[in-house]
Structure formats: structure tokens, C-alpha cells
Amino acid sequence: MKVIEEIVRVLRSEGQAILDCAQRIMSSDSHGESARQIGLAVDCLRKSLSGGGKIVVTGVGKSGKIGQKIASTLCSTGSLAVYLHPTEGLHGDLGLVTKRDVVLALSYTGNTEELLKLLPSLKNIGVPVVGIGGNPASKLAQGCDVWIDGFVSQEACPHNLAPTASTTLALAIGDALAIALMRTRGFDEHVFAQNHPGGSLGKRLNMLVSEVMHAGEKVAVVSPEASMDEVVLSSTEKKLGGVLVAKGQMLVGVITDGDLRRALQHRERFFSIRAEDVMTKKPVTITPDTLASQALRLMEDRPSQISFLPVVEQDGHWVGVVRLHDIAQCF
Image 1 (cartoon, helix red, strand yellow):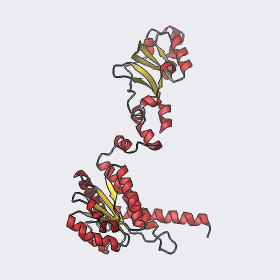
Image 2 (cartoon, rainbow, N blue to C red):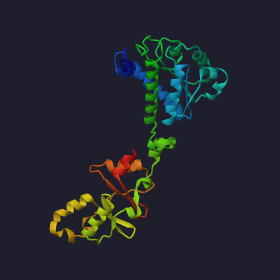
Image 3 (cartoon, rainbow, N blue to C red):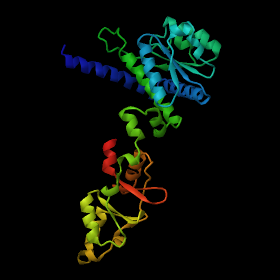
Image 4 (cartoon, one colour):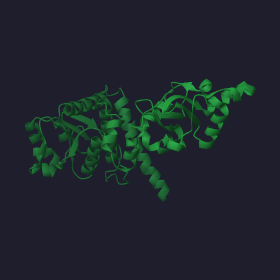
């Protein structure tokens, strides 16, 4: 068999497993049982987190590896989670589980011995258990408070032995739970940025307007009495797409290149017009300590986009200019 054909077959097989699961959740054939269980799972996880608890993810072998990734994704999206290996739990580490917690247990067969041995202790603690697996008749499924159907008709492995499509689906279900919790618990980009301070992602999320703005002599600034000749020369020299109109450091208006083009309709009167006659008074502004991502939304989420945004201090004194193009390049 050709290598490319085999790779495509595996990708399609694993992708189909996820699509089949989504279809089961949306289907009414089972009276909405899959959807009901998913809803119960999210509610159970959310209640534990709201009550000061955490999500304890557990599993053995490949399921354990997937469980570690799910725990990491939960943490990065604002849901406190830890991974507990069942064997370690049986030898003392079960002490990290409290009544306020919830356990997310992964086992495709649902009959993993180490995991099943944990159930009585978890019941004694009084912690709810949410299971993800492929066998609803398994001992784990019967012992869980909530069971999420992770059944796959065929593993991507040609011998139908190696966990492939089943682990991919379990990971996708974990991602879905994490994002659902993220949305229901109001975990926004500001908190996300706090949890990701390092790397390029953290840099983008934490970037301030002051880090991307043009300041000082790079900014074109004229007085309200400036002639259009001065405005055009200043705008052409700085090439930022606009000019600030200020009295000293106090911003009083903005003239964009678009304003200049519209002013040219006055033809012969153009060079007798003053800056204050053309400028936009009380323009939209932003402060230097605002997140760049907020500035981007401010400029884009409006009937007419802003490409040239003055940056001012709280007292109205200008400190720079930020352009839509500059911010967009950072994201």
C-alpha cells in the first residue's frame, strides 16, 4: 500500500470517529441520551469547580496519556485539573482527592483493573465520577455517575488493535468539555493571557498598545490653525495614514488620509482651509496601557473600521498613534 494512501486512510478514520460521536450527540434515535450525558458531565464538572474543587483525571496506558493532555488543556482554559495515575492512587496518592472534587476516568474497554479498584474508594470519599469509554455495559460505565459514549466502530490500526481512533476521540471529547467549561464559566482572553505569560502566544495576548504604537517624532502633529499645506506635508513625511491635531500635548482632533482626500473636493479652496475645519473632533482614542487585542477589536468591530487610532493618557494628552495594520501583524 502506498504511504500517502495509508496516511489519508488513518486521518479519515480518526476524523470519522469524531464525526460519528458528534452525530450520536445530535441524534434523537437514542432519545437524546448522549446529549443528556454530556450535559450532565459539564454540569458536574462545573459544580465541582464552582465549589472550590478540582477535576481529577485518571486513566492507564494510552488512556492515561490522553488523560494527562486533557488535564493540561483544562488548566490552560481556566478549569483546575490534575492527573492521577490509578496505581499511584492505590498506593497513597488518593489523598489529593477531596469531596469537592470530581473524577474524570478514561478507559475504552471500561474494565481496566487498576481503575476499577479505585471506584470503591472514590465512592467512600463521596466524589462523583464521570467516565469516558466505548463500552456502556462495562463495569466502569455501571459504576460511574455519568457516562460519556466514546465508542468507535473501528480503530485506525489495520488490525483493529492499537488504540488510535478511540484515543483521538477521547482527546476530542476532553477538548470539548474543556471549551464548554471555559465558555460557561466566563473564562475570557484576559484570564487566558494570565495563564499563558510565556512564549509567542503569551506575548501576543499580553501585548499592550504602548508596545506597538508610534510615538514621539514618528507621529505627525499639527496645530488647529495649521494650513492644509502643512497638514499634507506632515502626513506625507510621517506616512502613518493620519495627523494628530493638538494644542500643545492636548489632543483636539484627528485628520486621516481619507479626510484629506475628501477635503480635496473643495478644489481651489483646499489650501485656504485650516486643520480645525477638516479634523474629526472628539475622535475615538485608546490609552497606552490597554491590551493590543482590545485596540484591535475597537478598530474593527464598528460599521466603519478605524485604521488610525490616537493613543492618549487619562488627561487627554497624546502619546502616540497605533495603526490597524501594525496590530494585525502581531496577531
